[in-house]
Length: 123
Image (cartoon, rainbow, N blue to C red; front, side, top):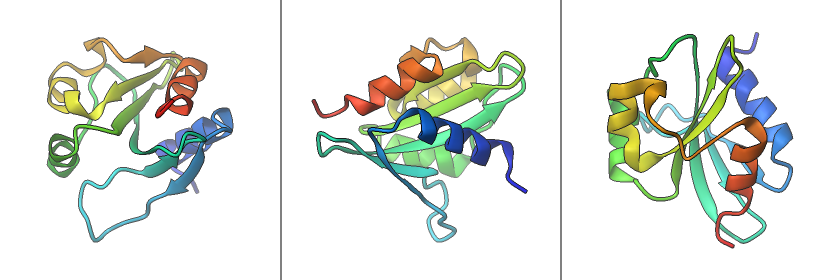
């Protein structure tokens, strides 16, 4: 059975058809994001997909450390269950996101807007 984050990844993947996605199943590197994306503009980036029931975003110390060490071309995409809201954050704000949760202003909101933003990376 697929978990909520795996289902969210699949939904996001279907919405962003111009991105070549590679799911990363990696137990060797703690904190490694869930997916590697590659745009039509030859641009690589990583995305950590999270699902939350409330305002708080659960990020492990390893996930936070990854985004601190790789603040560029890394993103955290969050789906809020209930409202279905989708928000995209740059990896560089991981500490603030861990502290403030979904109260932190996102880079963009909505499944379509977040997909479009990532599709245009490197343009």
